[in-house]
Length: 532
Image (tube, rainbow, N blue to C red; front, top):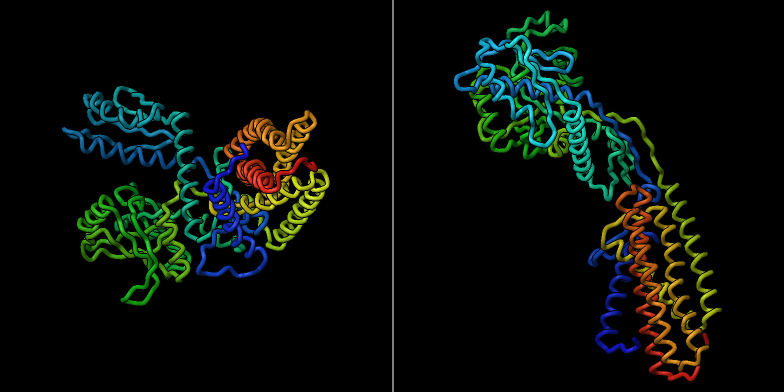
């Protein structure tokens, strides 16, 4: 137990010093000094409550998911019936009260239509997504199931959460907190971001991009009155467009969505020096775009973003290669923001800001000061008590405590974790827990000496017997910390991170390091008694 060869000492000191040195960039930053740029600079990220920043609560509308599913089903039904061999002829597809229905021209096609629709009705999972019924032997009615709708909403929210995460990461912020709350809400916390309007603009933009053919048969008077021809729908121009205040009728089906985008970047058009967004489709999207433009040369098509027309250029020639350019009176900032949104993907559902809070950096600085004051007072009290109670062994405990704090900071910096105000509370708690281990060891050594054991035997048995209780206690604390991290959120997870990291460093410094130092002192001094 007290045998420490040279290689083992070197290994333990290397671990201790490397972890402690990793804490220095964070200490320099907190003190207002610049860390040398030529050296590695892992830093502990400060949470929203310490660094300030923005807190936003977003809410989605499940009705949009239901409407989108209905539209997708309509397009799939039309495609399936048209591509059947032989073709299954149907009348107009109606969507009323959340249901989809269509009339077969020939009732003898019912069995074939039912067979073709089964993969759509059953979906890809274990949940039946649609109910299929037949009315009067010729009308097919598709009704979304409640389980299918709930699954679709859940998937949409998961996708929306991931899109929000990508957009915030593109801002260059570190350690944002993005979690789902309930069935239809997302909590977003971005430390260090003092411009909540920028965040709201970025997250409030659905970035649903569509390319649809303009309905040239629509009468301008009907469009102005909001009356769309059958099979078409009306969209207004964006506010900053030269055609603001007017609308266009576009074909509802047969267009292209921006789901197949692989890239988007802000740029400047060489023809007129306007800010534009250059987009690139994947192979499938590029083929669809090429087909659309090839079949509709000399016809206008509308570029629609979030239900508003950016522009409606004329297709002068087929656009091949999978690339396109979006113009629409952009500024450099708005073009870049749209490019970020398009790269991150479209939100599958609109998100509305229902709660907004901004934490100022002054409040965070005050929290840090008070937390460090509590840490300092607790540390001094523990140090005085340990030295007064255990003498030399108390000094070893104090040095171990110092390295413990540095190692926690260093490991958190290397792991790129976030420190919150509850995390500082976890620091204070960790100090007490670290000293607990030394108290157990020192008291055990006292008992061994009272039983008449020699000095070395008393120290060896003290560390051996106390270590069992220390490991048992820390294992239970570790389980509690992991559960807090897995099932908690925000500040609770910040506390759990410090607690779990602190458990490892506390056992390492309080048990292993102090034992190495005590062993070295015993070997060098050969004392006849212990002042403990």
